[in-house]
Each structure stands twice: as C-alpha cells, then as structure tokens.
Length: 604
Image (cartoon, rainbow, N blue to C red):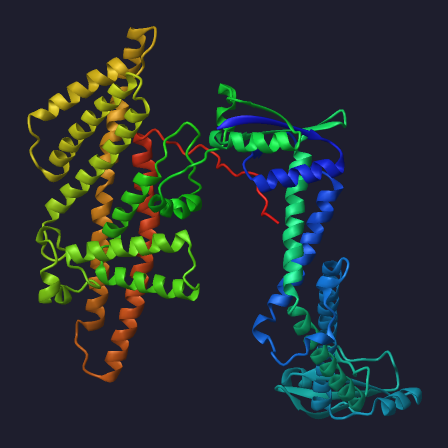
C-alpha cells in the first residue's frame, strides 16, 4: 500500500468533476484531513432522506400493483425538468393527504359510533334547548357511580353501553355538571357525518389510485437517490480535504501498489498533482488493510465482518486457515447429520427464494451445513437417535471410535487436543514464513517444539496418557531456540534474558490454549445429549393415543428446534473464539487494522 497526497484545483466545478472521476476510478482510500462540514452536505443529506421516505411509501404498494391501471393518467416525470423532485414532492404530498383523510375518517367513525350508542340525536334540537335555558349533558357511569346519584330528579338512565350506564343530566345552569367524565355531543349531525364519511372513503380510494400510478415511476426516485448519494459521497470527500489559499484542495490517502500506474495515468490525463511514497513508521497504524485471498476463503468474510475482524496492515492474512478450521469446528460442535441436512435444506430454500443470487453468505452456509452433515455421518448421529444410527447402511458409514453412541471418548478428547496443537502450529509456521529472511523464523520453530511438548503434557495431565521421553527435549530445544533467536539485536545477552523472562508465562498460556480445544468435544457431546433427551421426553413412554402422538411431535419440533438454535450459537461463540483468540494469538494477529474502503462511485 502506498501513501498518496492528491491535489486538485479548488473551483467548485473542477473539484466536483475531478472527484467524480476519482470516485469512478475507485482506488484511493481517503483519510480525511478534517471533519467534512458544509451547507451543501446538509442539503444533500436532507434531500436523500426525502427520497428515501418517498421510495418507502411507494414500496408499501408493491404488492397492490394493478395491471388495469391507465398509466397515461399521470404525467411521465422522467421527461420533466427536475422531474424527480416534482415526483418526490407529489408522493409526499399525496401521502400527507392520505394521513389527513385517515384522521378525518377516524373522527367520523367515532362520531358515527356515538350516534350508534346514543341514538340519532338532532343537534339542532339540542341547540334550541340550550337557547331556551335547558342544558343536557351525557355520562357513562358504572353501577357503583350510578348508586351515588340515583334518585335525583335531574338525572335519567337511558340505556347501557359496554357494561356502563348511559346517564342524561338535565340542568338550567350551563356550568352545572356531575363530577364524572362528560361525554360530549358530536360537532356534526348524523346524516352529515355519514355523507362526509362516504366522501372521505372516496377520496382515500382516489388517493390510493394516485399512489399506485406514481408507484410505476419509482425507478425515477431510485435513480435520483443514487445520484444524491453519489453527490453526498463527493461532498464528504471534497470537504474532508484541506483548501490551500483557496486555489488548491489537498487530500491524503492510500492506494494499492498494483493500482498506482492506473491512478497515475488518470491523474496525468486530468492534470492532478500527486505525491506517492511509502508510509512512514508513524503512519503504519493508519494504513488500511486490503485482503486478497482465494475465492473459497472469501466465504469466511461475512463472519469476519460480523465480528469486526480486520488484520493490521503488517499482520498475516488468516482467512484461509480461519475458513478451514471454522468449517471443521462447526461440524464437530453440531455433529448431527440430521441437523446438517435441515440446515442444508433451509439454506437451499432461502437461496431459491433469492433466485439463487451469488452471495458469499449462501456459499458459507452450504459449506457449514455439509461439514455438519459429514461429521454427523462419521459419528453416526442423526437427530440424537441411537436407533437411526444402527440402520445398516448408516452404521457402515460411521467410524466406531468417533461414534456418539458407544464411541471411544478418550480417543475423541485426544483428537481434539491434536487438532488444537496442529491449529496453533500452523499459526507459528505462518509467522516463521513471514520472517523467512530473519533468524526470528528459527524462534517460531522453537515455539512449535514447545506446542508439541505441551500437547504431550495435556494428554498426560488431562487424559492420563503417559508422556514419552522426548517431551522434555521438546521443551529444552524450544526454550533454547526462543532464547537465542526471538530478539536478535546488538545486545545479544539482553535479548536472550528478555525472551527467557517472558517464556514461563507464554508456556502457561500455550498450555491453556491447547486445553481450550476440549470445548469442541464438550459442546458437541452436549448437543447430542440434548437431542437424545428430547427424544426420550417425546417417545420414552411410547405413543399410544392420538393426543400422545401430537404431544410427541410438538416436543420433538420444539426441542430439536431449540437445540439447533443453541448449536448455531455455539458455532458463533466457540468456533469463532478458537480462531480469533487461540490461533490468532499464536499467529501474532491482533486484528488491529482498518479495512481498505476506497472512495468509489458507481459508473454512470
């Protein structure tokens, strides 16, 4: 990655056009020299929100498309000057009118409900009574409240509504009232409200028809939104640079080394000023990381993005190892061929709904599902059922020592520790390859020796397997290589003492790292045991009646569904952890980088 200082003319027209060219080139990762602030940014951002709101409104009518609509009734906004603005305003205006009409309809409904409860009272008669000094007020009282005023000559019970008593209070004093919540008369007569309600419904239908017509021109808004987003990106980049004497604007960024010639050709064509050089030691933390890996390893990218894992600029690309072992770990952690088949079918049907879109996520799900299915076949695990595992054709496919039912648990635990040692060894070999031109690579071979010594110690302490005599020599050889070659420099003795001082704590950490791989066995076993427990709950007493059969089906579906969810969580927790902490720690990867995200605009 090369550091790039870029200079362009400051005039608004030039900088806008030049930045669009730069964005369409899409090679420069821009590091803002200042916070981008300008009124134009706020204006474009506000316009984007309006377009997004208008598109969201039209999206809600996607399922209500009417092929019989006469689209010629609405003018074609794509052919009008600033048609996208006019269309957006029309959509928002129509939607606001719809909300107003809906509020009106709700108020009219409340009024009509009032007339349904109290009768078709003439508001004119009520007005005449008021003019003659007689005031009528309405209340809804509970039976208990009614007892407190019952027997008064100015109170009449005229009916019941929703278990409440409809009470009429008559007075010659306009200010006199009962100490209860008054029910007010509607503002309009019944027949007037009925006519208004019918007109409102007609207006809502017309309003809906307009929005359906406008929905057919939604692409005009989408194109306008894309353009405004391009404009916002340009403005943010523009004002993130520094203006020099109002003549030139300067930006700082980074560019992949293999794209330098391409950039230089464009820069020369448009007369841009630039300085391309190596990043300084102080700028290393600022340099973005561009990870290029093999297509099959790209499948792990959604997991790394979800966890926010980006290797530092000077760190190793761990995506290949991460992908291989994450896939392997997923199979062990779930370890049920039945579950793997379910995950595979779900992935297939969801992918089918997406019309087999080429998305990395689906490739990852297919890979993990097959891994789970494969490990489940090797261990003879099918929905936690020992009976299914004994079906002859399935029984012939399993490895007896790995079998979930009747297998050799000691062998499986030893295998998990072996996987851990191999995983950590790969990390040290990768570091050794990185230092292939330095004696530090020899120190990594020392760590490999220590790892395998620790593997033998773990087998002895945890599993009771006696360690061979070579174990002590693995530690001795590893310690010597680490002491001699970890910190090469002018002061040999000081470097050696520093390496030896850190060695005991590093060995303890390595010991705990290898033991950590037992989680693969423990979590995988718990998945099998939970599945078997749900099977026992559902079918242990047999199915003798229709009710017991239905109950068994419910228990099996809910139980195995819960177990699958927990298994998926285990993959995220333990499968990621063993790669992100144990392995990455031994590969000296801290995921301290920031991703290479070039300023990029869609070609238009």
